[in-house]
Length: 104
Image (cartoon, rainbow, N blue to C red; front, side, top):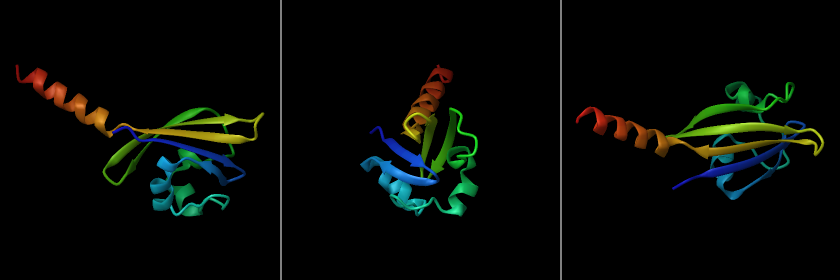
């Protein structure tokens, strides 16, 4: 199962998200069209720092999952796109492959 999240942020508020982002946003206690709470900003400054909107990547642990996020500003459109996908399965598969290769 691949989980891909899409979040759009403008002026410190979530202005759009897809269905896959709902559990993560709920966990962070973030709501559509509401300011992102300060605790979440403090925990995940790599994702929610809107003062220096430059493209960058961030990795976040959520429950038993690990997500990789690409944070990409779109100044001409007036928002920051946060694109995430779960990399947990990729890490587990890579670990299993390495273990199998080393046991040969």
